[in-house]
Image (cartoon, rainbow, N blue to C red):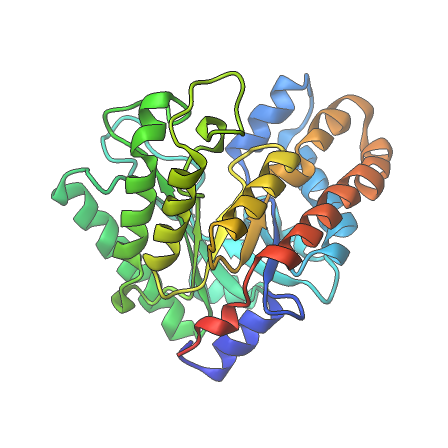
Length: 327
């Protein structure tokens, strides 16, 4: 934490205990697909802006902060709870599938300065990274993150780096094959981007295992990790960085995400919070597509609120304060 301004912004994004209990709804392409799958027909831009605004208005009273995107999320940023912090995404959604490497790209008319001017307390940038990919591709990504870090440092704003692992040779990251290599992929890339040269304030990361393949958590798939092995990977993850780090929900159910956090605590993980998206609000998308705004608002006020409050309860019992990791 290099300045008082960054430290103050970090506090704004956290709860009273120094845990990051953040709500994520910066999805763009994924949200479009969810609406389409639910049978939505209409103006996508208007619908996505409205859904994000509903989520922001109804759920930020129960979150320490919210992550939005500048393309659809600025109206939602105006209706969030005043006590909640704001993160804005800098990256374009998805990646160019016509070239190898899942190379990152930025929203053309956005900068860290503009993100700060929009009222954000932090910049979030998502990077797809395969620790075992060619040095040529990974060096491009490292330079990209260096630029992000320098830009955020110049604007005196925290830099949240979201790391999503993959394997250039394994197409399905939900497969058994990928589950076997995931701990290596996740934990090693955390080591890379914990280097001070990247100026990262917080790492937003996956849990180091696929919980669907952990002994006791699965009935439909083969066991890839015993409980002891899975716990060891969580412990190894904590030891991979001295930076604050938080977990993303990766689209799993609310119950699975809560169980994962409890398991992480048992494993003595020193994670510092969550940026939880679909596990909280995903079931509301079909309701919005089929039944409209008011029914969705009612769902958010009941089941959506329950989802986030249950998560907050688990988080308070499991996450460690990021202030414990200050120099």
